Image (cartoon, rainbow, N blue to C red; front, side):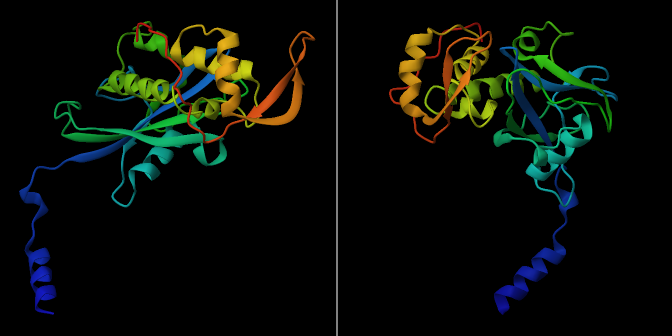
Length: 252
């Protein structure tokens, strides 16, 4: 009891204002693939700082929110994408703590990596809301090479590159690439994901031999576009790829 009273006395006398304030934000790297191109969801900032620049969707974590809850809320508010109603894989990417990463005050960001499943032909519509002046899908490699009005706001170019490298690296030894596809897919569709993320062509024969043992054959087939031979449909497994696939060297 004595120890409990001592702790209560300590908490009652504790003054948080004696310490520098630090704000917490949640940012999201949302990837999807269409037309064989890796895309990322970005917003155009409607307010200062970095007004009118492209940025990752995200925002401040509320006093009664977790970073994960804030990430989902901010994504829905800024782009209209509701992670609760979409086929997605989400994981924490990293925490960014640079003291000068935000010109307003000390802000720490918990970044999340989101993989959105599509059939490769269309992406869900994004629409700006909240404090975003615009929202859209952008080719990842174009953004990283500065083909859309220079670097992203804050340190978001670095966060985007970290998200790309996390995904590209995990694809060497896991079947995480299948999270960017519908539940059943062909080996050709899966190879398209690898080529889009790694930004390099892959030999079809070698890819098929390497990946087939890592997947579950559904026993079903789909007819290829243009009346080609039927292609087998597969599902992802949680098996590790061993030995890992070799990621081709690229500019990023």
